[in-house]
Length: 354
Image 1 (cartoon, rainbow, N blue to C red):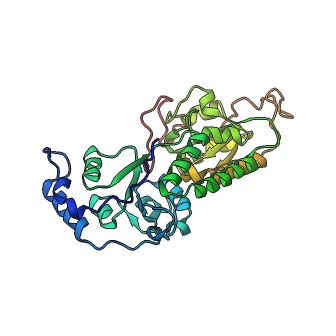
Image 2 (cartoon, one colour; image 1 turned 90 degrees about the vertical axis):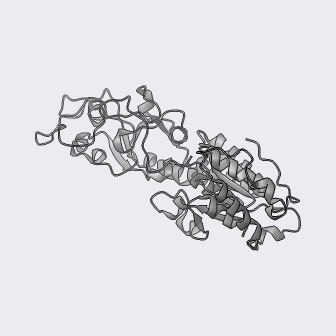
Image 3 (cartoon, rainbow, N blue to C red; image 1 turned 30 degrees about the horizontal axis):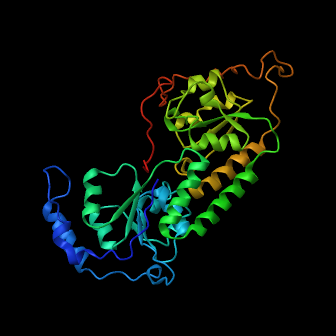
């Protein structure tokens, strides 16, 4: 990902308003001529906000608006006071935020409309990769740089994103400090026991993560294997309750409050440990890696030594690896939102940060 150096000599739009209006405006572009003209005047005439970051005497530091919750968390760590003008509205919602609530409360929030962004007078807008073409074109015509942040699928990709955003903000040392904290958390979460325990990360609707995901790497780093991937399931596939009962994992990490994740039939899987996993730990990389690795390590260290599947339970002819019988009062046909198959449709999450 290329992050060009900000140009401190770039002038505000007031001196070149005519060139900012679209010369090839087409019907249905999503941004009308009158709207762009009004926004241009607003940008040119509104007083510029004062920023401590702009008064840095050593080098130019751009002001930034973040419209992506994963970028929110990183930028809050690698910018200087006054440099990060606003976070995405996701960071104002405790159910969706991927950063510390107290830190998020220090910044204004924006829903990302063009009018809101321009009123903040940023140099750079950071968003996810799915930016409407008309919006991206409007940013360009109005003299704003747009940078996008993709979904990090590995720890190494996350390190690269942190370095890129820190370089964009003009604070590479802050990026390296954040990476150091992440690496220290990963080292502390590494298990002493070399055994790898099968763990199912189970989201509402039976959704499971694929093996080429960040959470799958964190499972491996903390002493687990991806139970769903070992059974041929990929990212956002569905693993219904019936299959979990017939072929139970050693650990179920329940990421959500779906009724199926709390079905009474699961209580009969005596060799399976169930532990909650905050769904917010699955959304982003960056600083989120620290609490995610810490939580997985807590679960791993709480487990007893892995049972030998060939060992029969004392006084019983049922092997630990066998599906355990269900109580007569429990019915799998009860009205629950169970997935119909493992191939499922597209993943549905409370939000899509990219």
